[in-house]
Amino acid sequence: MTPELQRYYEARFDMMATPGWADLIEDVDKIILTLQDISLIEGEKDLQFKKGELSILIWLKNLKSASEQAYEDLNAPDV
Image 1 (spheres, rainbow, N blue to C red):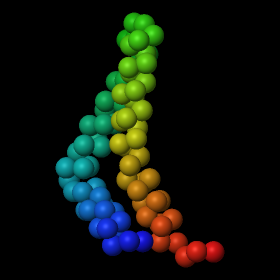
Image 2 (spheres, helix red, strand yellow):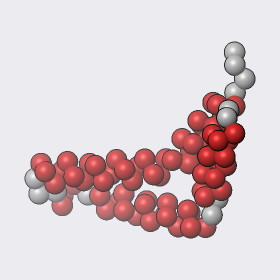
Image 3 (cartoon, one colour):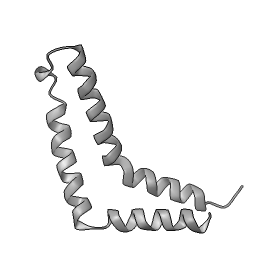
Image 4 (tube, rainbow, N blue to C red):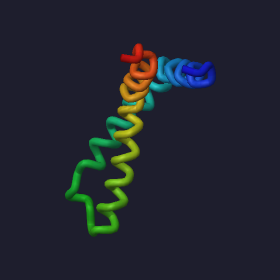
């Protein structure tokens, strides 16, 4: 792993260890719950927009675990 990539992951993990990150993820969870109510969708355009919102929020919610997995994969010994 390059030093730049190492610093990238260290900075990301530092950010994710803050109370602010935990608060953000808590808010994301609440928003995801509201977006999953399909009874509020009025048409295909609205459906596609909500799918996009939901996709981004789920990506953000899973960013920590995805980053941890990528970091582990990058540090795994070559087999």
